[in-house]
Length: 118
Image 1 (cartoon, rainbow, N blue to C red):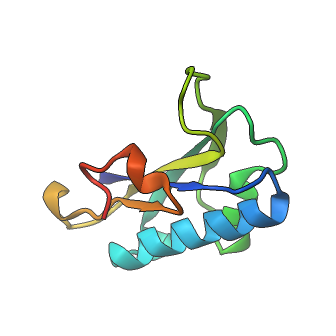
Image 2: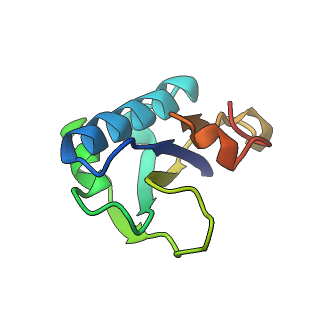
Image 3: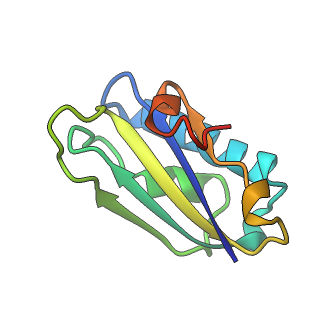
């Protein structure tokens, strides 16, 4: 089992944009790591305190993660932190070595983890 990280940024707190951004992020993570939804064990989402319009897990359900345990939480409110960010940590069954995992940061979130962003 491996953990895979990722994040994306929204331009505004909007349910449609949330769904599109989360769908894009999860799809990229699965594709880049050659995973299917059957490989997923669980998914943890966090959002910054300024996002209220939708649950990221709702978008995940929309792309077929119906039987994968999902949970959403709020990121801690640190002064000066990047806003309108959705973060994800997937736990997946994979034969990839830890250094082969592709962590995915999109829509400006690359700035959060330049050390591991692909």
